[in-house]
Amino acid sequence: MKITELKPDPLVCPLCGKPNTCINLGVLDIKKSCWCNDPTITFPEELLSQIPPELRRKACICKTCVLNFQASQKSQ
Image (cartoon, rainbow, N blue to C red; front, side):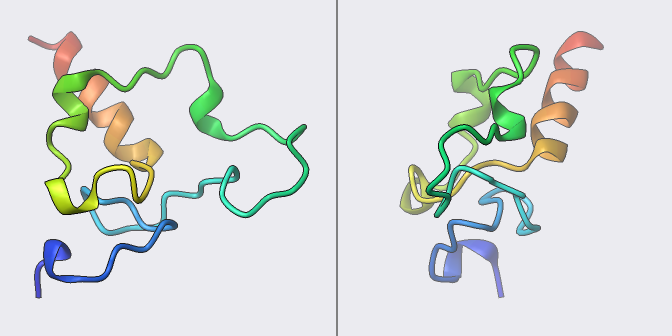
């Protein structure tokens, strides 16, 4: 079964299907900071466009996918 065939899970990365370790979801204490708030991590449109349309804005990309994308951009 493909990731795109599953019901979107906000705690699963829409690119790799692994846990995205998002702290922002379901947390009432807004003082906690998720890894995605790190200023060195960016989410360029080129990365976001890789998310299947039906999963966009339904789950966060995981840190591994973001860092792998950033590394691939630096090596080009």
